[in-house]
Amino acid sequence: MTDAWLTAIASSPFALPLLFALVLGDAFLVVVPGEAAVTAFGALAVSTGAPPLAAVVVVAAAAAACGDVCCYLVGRVVGLERWRWMRAPNTQAAFAWARRRLDERTALVLFTARFIPFARLAVNLVAGASRLPAPRYLAVATLAATAWALYQALLGAAVAAIIPGGSAAAVVVSVVVAVGSGLALDAALARRRRPDRRG
Image (cartoon, rainbow, N blue to C red; front, side):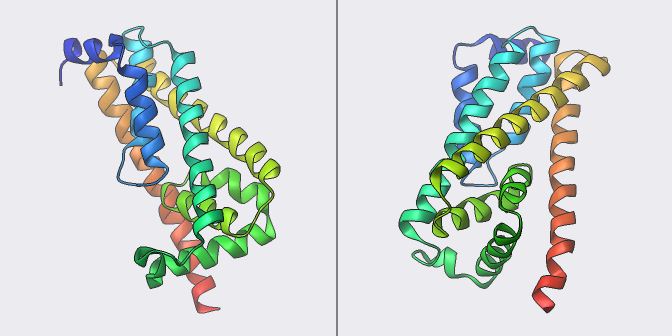
């Protein structure tokens, strides 16, 4: 990975469509590096000047909202037991956790789940399966997607403004910070879920 290669990617007409596809895919598959992509493009926006930081935020927010709404619709139409992976014990435990949290603090849980990779899918599926009113869901999901996109892009931009060494260093450090933050949030969530399983 070199500065010239990253500059070519950032200035490519396919840069923003690629970002959209990665973030959209991340809503369904946690192995797709949506967070890392937004953070990396945020870093590139500062270190190379392309794509514009505002465009990174808008595209990432739109893709995140689309992905979350698609998961909501899957939950609403398909339910939580149609496919084999949904019936796995760990998946059902995640759904049960999400259902309890949504019953207690719907808007807060929808908002915060957008920032937690492994909770995002469960919460959005359960919101749909629970028939959460669509207008309320859309309002919170859109706000959460916008806040998430701002956070991820500005994280990358901040790293690029601080870290010397060109685009490659900025992208690597920003991606490490983004992935580390996601794993830390996920670990904290796992610790909070353990007492629920005992109860």
